[in-house]
View 1 (cartoon, rainbow, N blue to C red):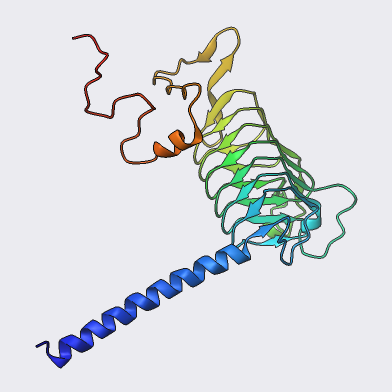
View 2 (cartoon, rainbow, N blue to C red):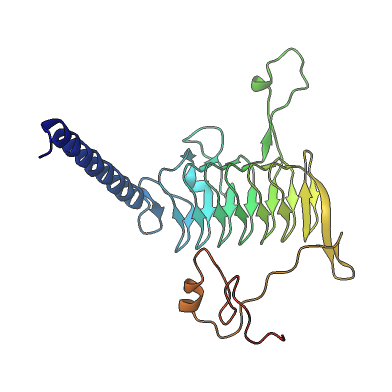
Length: 261
């Protein structure tokens, strides 16, 4: 027969497990009901919030959202800061300050801090902790604290289809083209041409595609296999697992019956 001490320990273990389950269920409920969307905007009144767009809970700092426009089917991760102007409650004029296109994904803990104009095209994805701003501090007066010197604004544009890697910083005056890869940790300022890869601090072009020459320098890794025509959504979902393989392709370690001996 179990001792009273072992019985008490078992009761405590069950109670801890039950409390843990309740906490996680409660947090999932809070996340679901705290998320912001067009049909459930909560306390926020964005200039526009497209259908299918969702801002995960908890949000970061959000203010003057009337000057922030988000297109449809965007995903904004947890703790993302979206702000327009210096302080809440300002009248920033008739035009949007931050414009984010459709199909964008903004990684968690990123900051998009606009004062004059930040325009992000369609299908731009960022990793976590990306910082995008159109304002920088002046430092030319050696006697005045830098934080008290009047800042300078320069518009920022990020072309459609671009990918901004984890921890990248997009500085005022940046003009990033279409389908650009910004490497993790890069610090970007100035013009970045379409179909290029930039890396470093300050960021420089390390690879570029042109119709005449293709990718220079050439990409040495093999291209991923395209999904065959006619594959159903159910088949694609069936690929999710530890041993991914396309339909009709033998799993890893299995001989291909059609291969020549």
